[in-house]
Image 1 (tube, helix red, strand yellow):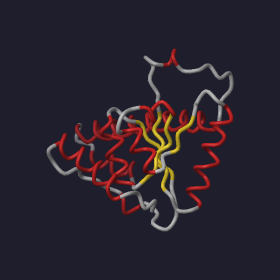
Image 2 (cartoon, one colour):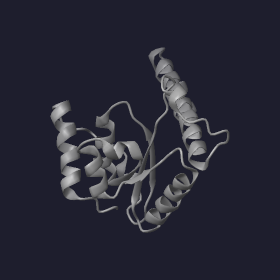
Image 3 (spheres, one colour):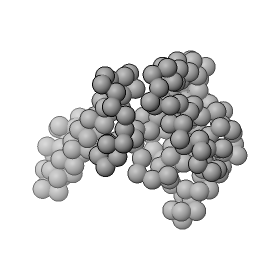
Image 4 (spheres, one colour):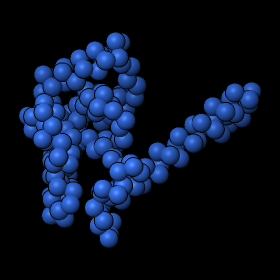
Length: 171
């Protein structure tokens, strides 16, 4: 585990609890490794997703440097050791990969959010090549879409009364 500050984890949990007005239900954390670091790759729709994953996975975030300037969020990131980088700078992107691998080798959990938005795509730098992190993000996005489509199809089949077929496919 990352041994993330209990204050930060408590703050994250309280923010989520205060907005949802109920205790979040987290499933699957028993499958996360306890003696070595791991990488959590996710997308987010709101700031609550970020706080919930920080709390649930005890992970340190990788973040674009602009996040470091957001009041409270940036300061909290610096306090817990978030890795801020300039996504327009090739050397900064290389350093963040090296730092994340180093931290994971020391049993730290790393949290990477995918910033993928068609409406913002024109604001992203045109790299002209694909970086390692770009490749991870693109592949993860495609896998997430495929998993979503698979699950929607399984639910549709269940709704049509074909639960036995779903069991055969899904086992």
